[in-house]
Amino acid sequence: MPGQFSVAINRLDALFCVEPASAWAAWTTAFGYYWSPSSKALFLRFIGRESPSYSRAEERDAERDNLATDAAVLRALVKATYLVWPPANDPVHEDAYSPDIADKATSKRSYFLNALTALGSEQALASLDALAVDPDLRRHRDTFLYQRDKLVRTSVRRDLLPASEAITFLNSFSKTPTSIEEFRALIKRHLVALLEKLHHFDDDERGGSVCLNSFGR
Image: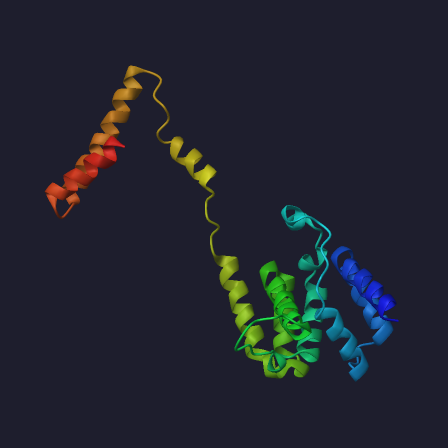
């Protein structure tokens, strides 16, 4: 019955958010690992549906999504979506965009792969390596290798210092003076920095104006 199918899909979707491994086990227990036409059609219905959200917009970031932290299940879902709905099936829109099951399936496939890459863990790296050499996915090898390189580049990139921490760090070198001596030392540091700027600036007149304006602020 359509109503029963919708309820079952809703429960499976919720289970993926709470217990991803159990959700995938439930799917493979029912349909196995062989993608028959009927199982492909059902999986397409699953990934091509509108995912329900019962929270207000400002609360959605706090919704539980354990799937986004499970590299093993994400790897399985990436493979499944590429087999059931490969990029060659993605719709092309030339006029008005009205998302249907095909568009949502395309977005879901991208979500699974990007979520796996975003983990930035050794498990995620191993999963992308496994996808790249999977004989069933050889047509998409370059995609997985690109995501692998993206994961590596992101992992070695230094995190940006938050503004609050940057302010604290800078204040530790120029704390508010609490005595005449500290105030004189602060002014001296500013004057030395100003003179250094004037000395190395190409246009002395313009440089002096810029530096003095900066000092005035």
